[in-house]
Amino acid sequence: MRISNKIKTLALVLAIGLTSSCTLEEGQSLNGAQTTSISEGLSKTELPQVVAGILSNMRDRMSTQRDVMSVLGREYWVLQSSDPGWGTELAAGLLSNGSFFINNPYSERYATVKACNLLLESLEAESTKIVFTENEIVAIRGFANTIKAHELLSVLNMVYQNGIRTEVSDPDNLGPFENYDDALTTIMGLLDSGFTDITTAGEVEPNTLGVSYSEFNRAIAARVAMYQGDHAKVLSALADSFMNMEAGADLNAGAYLRYSAAGADQLNPLFNALPSSTDGARLVYPDFLDPASFEAGDTRINKAVIRSGTDPELCLAGMCGTHDVLLYESNTTPVGLIRNEELLLLYAEANMTSNPGEAEAAIDFIRAGAGLGAVGAGNVDEDRIIYERRYSLFGEGHRWVDMRRFGRLADINQDYDRAGDLSPVPNQFPIPQNEGQ
Image (spheres, rainbow, N blue to C red):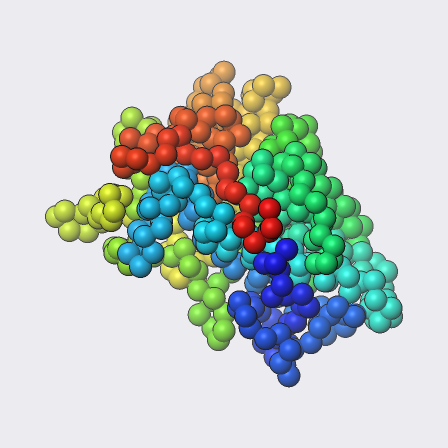
C-alpha cells in the first residue's frame, strides 16, 4: 500500500507537549534529531506521547471525509472557488479513483492504522516487557486495537462493497482486500478484543476524548453491529457504552477530537467564519430547510443559519444556498466522533421491532431536546428513524451511509441538483488507484 510509505517507521516528536499535535505531513522526514522510533521498543516516557500522537493523527483529513460524505448525502454543498472539483466531480457524482476526495482520507486513516500497528509491534519487544507490566501491555493493546478499528471503519464507510485491507502491519506483505461483510466482522473482532483487554487491564493515558476508551469502544461497536444488522449486539454494546437516557442527560456528551490555537496544534477545519464566501463555504442543501421535510418547531434546523444581506443566496457552479452550516462555534470547538444522541438513535432502531416502547422512549427523549412532542405509540418505524437521524446527526457523516444501508439512496431529494448530476447519488468510492488494483 503505497499511501502508507510516509510512515514505514513511526516517529514521534518528543519535544512537543502532550496536548500538541504530532501530525506528520506528506514528505516530511521522520529521522530528525528530535524524533525517536518505537518499532524496537517502548519506554514509559514515550507511551503518553505515542497515545497523544495517535489521537492527534485521527484528526488529519477527517474534515475532508465529513465534507465528502455530507455532499453525497445532500446535507450541504461545499463551495471552493480554488477547487472546482467539489462541483464538477463530487456533487456531480463522478467519483474517480485518483481524486483527493478518496485518496486523502484513505491515506490518513491508514496512517493512523499504521501508527497503531507499530505501537502493537513495540509491545512484543523485550525492552518493552522489561519496563511495562503484563497488565499494562494488555491495556495498551486494547487502546491500539480500539483506535485501529475506528479508523478501518472510517475507510470502509467510504469504499463500501469494494472492501478494504484489514491486515496491513507488514508493508511488504499486505493482506488481501476483505469484502464489506468480512471487513465488518474483522473490525468487530478488533473492538471486542480491545474491550476485553481494556476492561481486564484498565485504561491508558492520556485520554482527551471525553469518555473512557472502553466506553468509546462499545459505542463504536454498537455502530458496527447496526451495520451488521445484529440488534442484540447493538443493545449489548450500548449497555457498556456512555449511552445515557436519564433525565437531564446531555445529548452532546461523547467522544470528541480536540483542537486549539496553541503552538503547532490544529484548528478545527470544519469551522467557517460566517457569512462564508465562495473561497470556502458550506451551504445547507435547500431540501433540509423545506417545510415539507421537517416538523414545525424542530430546533435542529438551527444548524442552518441564514446568510446576511437582502439577498442571502450564494452560488458557485450552479450550487446555491441561502443558509450556512453552523455546527461549530469557533475554530477550536471539538468535533464529535460519536455522541449520546447517536447512541440513543441506535438504541431506538435496535428496539424498533422487538421492544417498541423502549424505541419510543429513546426517540421521545431526543425529540424533547429538539422542542418536539412525543411520537406516540406504534410510530417508530424506518421512516421515523431516518427522519430523526437526518436532523440529529446533520453534517456528521451519517446520512449517505444511512440511506445506503436502508437501500434508499434513490429517496435522497436531489431537486436542487444541477442538470447532469448523477441521480441517485453513487453508493461507494472506488479503491484509490495507488492501491494497484
